[in-house]
Image (cartoon, rainbow, N blue to C red):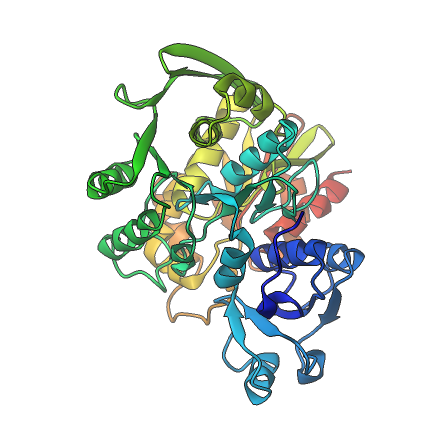
Length: 463
């Protein structure tokens, strides 16, 4: 039986309903019986999926799209104050609800697992959703990307577990009260909202402090920021801390990660026993995500050997080293990586998976603020590729910053010895790559923006 729908969520209107986080909440509400409506900037498969669930989806933002009887207007931090539907909501005195508050309401009364960290959240949340579903526990889940199997980012389940990706970028993860919190890593990012690592630590401490009494924090024993956060929260008397990683003192110790082509075999030491299972995506980074998922499931009381077997059923998330296809002997793979740590992890994973292949990267920087702060590190990461094409910055929600362009990345990459080409006209990329690639090469489209659209175009051009 579905939990009762909060009154404010009975007839919600979502501004930007097609977004990864927004659409997930809208889908769950529609599945629970709410009368969902919303608008988005453009038509998409997500909009069609929402309509199939009974939601009304308008394309474009206009005052007439907001029904006067809407019970609330749901927004994310990306929605600007001058959005016409948001302005109209104020005129009609319709309550405005942040996406995080809506998600918190959906988790009410359920055993929640909230997955946080600067990167790896979507993959880890997805692994848990797949494993728990495979075990017949029928969880609800809200994820920042579409699962490759079910092909959706959210689902209402009849079980008592809710798995959610917890977004630290705007501090919204502080709204949740999970039974289990996962912290994969703690690094400086989201520079428009955080001025220093101290602010990042404070935010994560608040998140961890919201774990219900008697609940569990699952946290990396290897990553420096996570280790520091563990030191800061150790004194929370009502919190059980479970560490995981290669560190010899980790509660769930990673004994070995063995590459098997585009998969990995992982062996962990848990409770004095060795346990081996398969992860169907390459690279140590993703193997550690799976171990975090394993530790979280065990914290809920699920037998470790059952979870390990179920984790092997995970087949990936769209845009997380997703194979888009092969043409003329060239494989094209898509990566959402946009932070230097993520970029390095994915490039190293591809190197390990295909050591005898050339690796060509099409990289699109995401956000001016991130490029300003981390452009040098992005350039250094690209040195792991045999050759790279760097596009102009994808602005998303930001306005340009004077002097901040892709040249910051290209200059740093050149200094690091990378072979980098600047391409300002995205439509020319398929021709550029076709001129560079040869049979046996791997092409990786990388970034959080619309660079993902280039994969099919490159395959078509190679064909």
